[in-house]
Length: 635
Image (cartoon, rainbow, N blue to C red; front, side, top):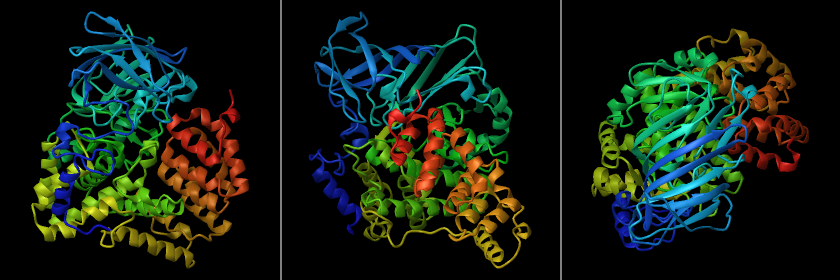
């Protein structure tokens, strides 16, 4: 356990700068600007030749489930090298040309590597400025989900969406797929008539007759923020900078649910500086979307599971919006530094929610976050993955999705809350505002962040450095003993209600009529492990949990139902698992079912029907839980 000051540690970092072989050793000073780091999840060699702009021209073929395109790159040949490397996975490379004159050049496909795909090495000349890759995606491209009309809300047209994070952009565009490589882009996309196409760029508001749409993203972004969605969707504005896209049957509900989006954006700017991406719009996707949200610039992708009808789940919008600063603006250089994206964003999200909805509301979010963190710490320890509870990870040879646990989000944000409480909120806010401004549109490693922390906050104060104790928070597993814990009177009152119910007060007489989603989640999480079927039935009859329209409450209730074998909830559980593709809900529910032979049998029966509705990000996780073989899936 390291106990030295950050100041001393930063000195050691400079000595280690020449040892660029380990993911846990630091780069040279000012690495955010020099890109002097190694990304173990990309074949690209940006120190030799790197992309700076993409002009993408594509035709989307729904019938054959394929994207055929030309990726035209402007490159910087830094060393006069005769090659440039791209990342690909399951792509058909048809030909490659160089220069504006499109001179055909040779290329080589490397050996297939698990998770990573294949390196595409293109022959270039020292003065080559343009590389043009003609290619075609395969139907099974992991980033792309092709949906039939029946899998959408309106059931009128097919639908397509991509999910590029972490390293799936390479499955639909040959690209340098590293979060440390940024580029601007423009695009021209041809789609079937009657559908609207959108990207993480400037977007149309309505369909046109030609089915050809053009886009521009002037601000440089990493590949994982490339995004495409095509469907029968419409747009409604919220204010001059914000709006929402959704299928027609959902647009009014979505517009109402996200009414406070403009207020959130203003709150975010008051905290940490101007919004740099022009517009902030959200699109509500079909239920198979594997995440709660994805922070694609200018167009957040959102799950329909947050449409609760009472605006109680909109902290997810605050989270994705916060990524416009932490992640999209200042980006983790590699997936080993993932906490720099999600820890900062989770902290920022709660600050936005506090500013819009008040301190009591934010305290409940902090308390639930701490519960999630404790659960992940316990699970990772039991699974022999204790090293994955560090903030700085070493994911070399592993799928970067392995690092996308609550550790990055909740331990990372708790670390920042710890610093805030030591330095005072006003001082820490000035630090964060300057951090985002000074490092805008740059990549950040953990070690470079420590240098910035020392230079701009600690400033040689050894006492403050010892109090912050950054080395233990970042490089050691688990939590330091002096970690903060946020408590809230509202949760204490919930616990009093639980005691009253267990003491004989009927469930229907509990003072719960004005509880928020967060209080209901705490109520369910604090239930004892030995409830009888009669008690489960009483709760269900009083509060109608099995019929709830709130996905967060439903998912928590289903875990309780599985643990207590409350079979009355099983039909709705089955329907939920078939309809919803959000991995956050699927993973714990399938894990809970798999703990017993009868539960495993039921899980596998449900999964056979549900799996075709899931995105690869979700079904690859559930395949592992259920030991599912591809041969078991229906054709």
